[in-house]
Image (cartoon, rainbow, N blue to C red; front, side, top):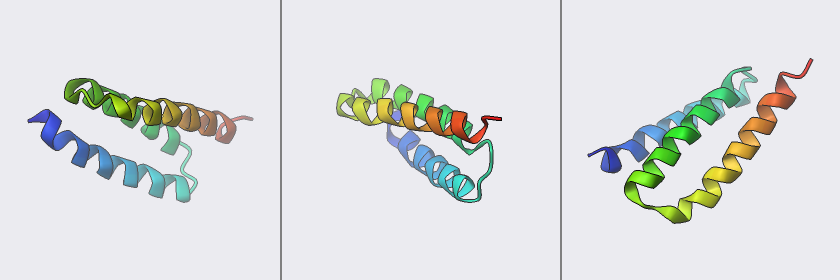
Length: 72
């Protein structure tokens, strides 16, 4: 059941996070990082290994953006 429905929830979180980033919300990238953890869990549960490169790239992009946006 988790494998079936989790991608829909994660997609909604991804859209929400991108809207927050567009509004320059400082926590948008942290939400994105948390969401990538959930995507990683889904990738492992569903054994959808070809999503791992995308997941890894998003960890790097969201982490970089969070650091750049919050650098003082």
